[in-house]
Amino acid sequence: MENEIKSSGLVTGMAITGLVLGIAGLLFSLIPCLGMFGVYPAGMGIVAALIAVVAAVMMKAQKGLAVASLVVSLVGFGMAVKEIYNTNARTKALDSFMKKH
Image (cartoon, rainbow, N blue to C red; front, side):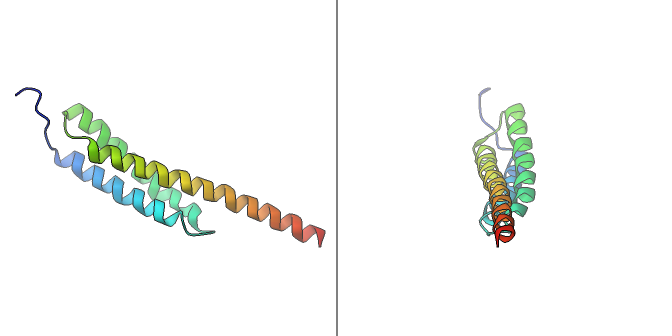
């Protein structure tokens, strides 16, 4: 019974926190022109999810929810960063257009 996988409150709590923040960042990154602010909740979700994954590995607890929250947070962070670049490109295009006319 030595290899039995345990459930830990710390891992579950941090994983759920990371998942909620990752989903918030993901949803916020879908809003045009404001999606760049999704970086903050998604970034905090990545930190919480990494803490949950490390704690799960160290405690030999279940890590499925922790890994899922890390993936969702990373996707939300990536989409928010993409929105930052898109907003920057739109601003440069608008500036270029306004200088020509």
